[in-house]
Amino acid sequence: MQDDCITIALGLPGVRVIREEETATEIKVEVQYRCRWAVCPGCGQQTAKVHSARLQRKQDRRLWDKPVFLVFHKRRFRCLGCGKVFTEPDPVCGSRRRTSQRFRCQLGREALNQPVRHVAQKEGVGESLVRRCVTEEARRLLEAPGEPPQARVLGLDEFSIRKGRVYDTAVVDLEQRRVIGVVSGHRQQEVAAFFTMLPQPEKVKAVVMDMHEPFRQAVELCLPQARVIVDKFHVLLHVHRALDQVRTSLQPQRGKKGELFRARYLLLKAVERLTPDQYVCLIDLLHRYPVLQQAWALKEAFRAWYRSTTRAEAETKLLLWEKAVREQGPKSFQALLPMLRIWRQEILNYFDHPYTNGFLEGKNNRIKVIKRMAYGYRNATNFRQRIFLTNLKEAHTRVA
Image (cartoon, rainbow, N blue to C red):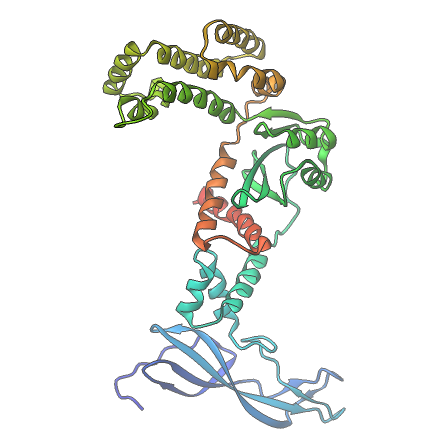
């Protein structure tokens, strides 16, 4: 026995420590359950008759950066009533488990924020065990005490599981700021199947989305009371691309990268957010490129259009903006007119229900971080489970 050691509590009040041994690589603790009797699973009688005992080695959470192994003196009891022989219960680890329950909880919590392989290598266990622990921990965290409130405003956006090949659709409650579903796919029938499972679909009053036609078809089919709203930032994204196409058309294709290449973000930035120096540089640039000045003015006019106070005012101003584009706008801006015609009512619905998918876009960024942490997911169920767990992180952040 070492003479420079200290004693700390094992933290398992149901067991009694028989002896312990610490080596350079591990800590081994021999233990036995304190209870001297057990209940027969056959007839329900209590018995204290020990039939036999054997040693079982099970891993516990680390102590002083060393793995801890609990060596249980597992007893088998004989019932004096029915004669049945049975093994005593194992509440610390669970039936037929080779690790303690608290160690599995620790593995699950660590692997929610780290790659599974990293956690497995650090703790010296198999990756399959860590995956099971993640599933158990996620199931425990996601158990809701009651039925969640009915969603009134939904947000839809697709994200890639494997880029360019497999897409899923995130469905969020924009008012409660939480993910309520992850649809496998982004086609009309797949999204419609999710809508049909909503408990009270008639209470959904608005659905915010990008200009993805299958989404609109699914809403019209399953949520007839809901108004489709095209997300404001997706519309502005098309306008910004049109401005950027004008810039690249004026930019030299060969040679050194000139001032137009460096001015991309200066042109796309909102005019009210420019610093005085940036504003002077921008005005100087636009004076030397009249076509670019015209495109930039159209971009800013469209941004100002979103500040309309009523739908009627927005309809009038949109007609004037389209007229200016048709008469003197660059070709890239004229290419926006068919989009504005096809999605006109859905874009104007924003002025009746001013909702955006800003929260959902932030959630998609978090989904990308989850993918990068694990270098992608082959198991789609695990991936969706981690997306739902972000609800808990968002709620904790708001409370804190």
